[in-house]
Image 1 (cartoon, rainbow, N blue to C red):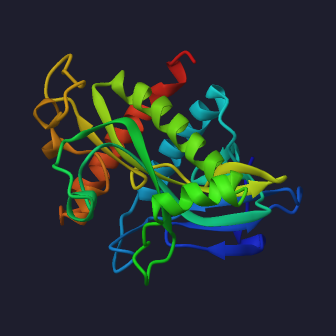
Image 2: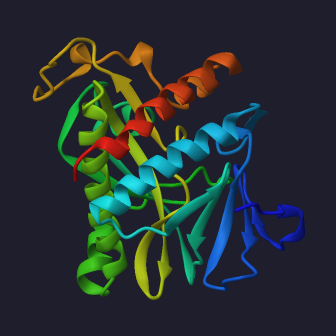
Length: 265
């Protein structure tokens, strides 16, 4: 299949992707990856040649794996390089849903956790998606109230899917001696059902390689068992590494996810 994107109507353009209509099917759209990379709620921004292709490969591999695992997603196929065919949303839920296995990043400051603390079970939190407001955290007690007293079943479904996806991907990355540290995903309604949407690529999670073979990851703190200095995620960009190093780390991720097709589910 060869698409002439210039002939298609653009529906929306975000920081890292463009959405085009599919003239042959009103129930699907084309999601096209860009070479842009951002951090700090969009304040930091660069173009990395080749990033779109690498992110597209990672996204393709992960969504095809999750579809095989039985997760409800918007992903259908990847008809050509840098392009995904996905189901059209009825409604986008304006939240980022974050699951964490190992404490690092912002939670060290506002959550008062020590870096390397292992969360078991995985903790999952909701952030209102708004760059100017810095994606504020929703109070967990209030989310539970919405679920229990306001029939907010969408929140429970997002929470359940997020944890399931986290555990599926944690097991997959573990086969390649890499720990999934945390992960943020987005959701929408498709045919009235809560559905995993958007992309999953190097900017969606933190990945730390194991420091040694067969690490003890059942400890209260696992920092000694992991190698954050060898991180494979967008933190390399946030921390100011040169763009060549950033894309090389993303290429390592794509090399790993390329092998997800061989994992039995």
